Length: 356
Image (tube, rainbow, N blue to C red; front, side):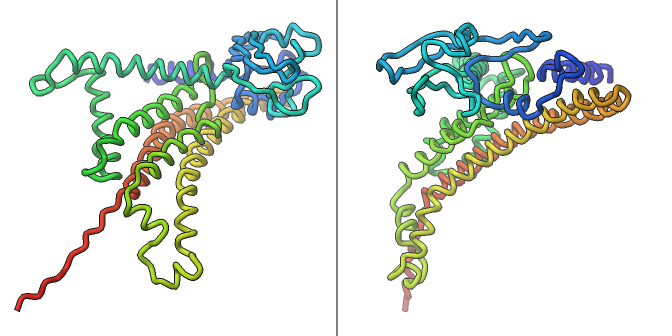
């Protein structure tokens, strides 16, 4: 019980450091700016705030100028040094989703900057390497027929076996699942680690990577390729000439049109499901944190009472998000496996022979 209490106190402290408190009691809390600021991508990684001083990790900015056609590489800290937030003709436009623009041009320049989400992905990949390289070394040094892994390697093997046997093999089919297992296992663990890292309320976590629709779009696009590029002839026959009454296929190709659009609705559902669930969870946790500061400005006694309930709700939401982090990775992998399995149908055509 003491350990649970200590974890709760530590979590509350971390959540308070995640959202900076106003420097003065009279300062109004901008909930929209706090919530959207922490969930959106950025050219720097905000760590914490002490008073009016922001401690951030500047990141490299790589943009191509429309003025001279040259690539410009500099630190994002230069924007604070330049007059009016402009450096070398470039500035961050807060009114247009915090993206970089160039003075005198309405169109965005080519932007290959290393943003917060990019750094978070690199860190997530590093975590995956730290997890699986020791596991691979254990299997290289031991014969699995004589010795079973224990401890951390054993836990990873159980999780990998569960996803591979119960999700991938079941969804795709025993005959076709092997070529897709590495891809889907990588997808599962990447989403899981990314979701968990996003729940850490301080550096090097906290970036809402799976709450970025461009990231979930790319993940869904990879599944789209796996489905449609490697689908067999029976799959494409069901798309353009399904086994339905002829009047539903010609002269008006009703069913082929529906089947064709389903090629895109499947990955679209994967993209939106992961994005919406992770974005909503982060927004709720941040909003509950802001409630504490808002109510404390109204009245100290009322604010203290509501703060207790907000802290309890935040602990509950963080615990729920831990579950959601696993569920979303599981559902994304399961649906991807099912969609890939649907791209490998096998119809058995039998001929009845009547023996006299």
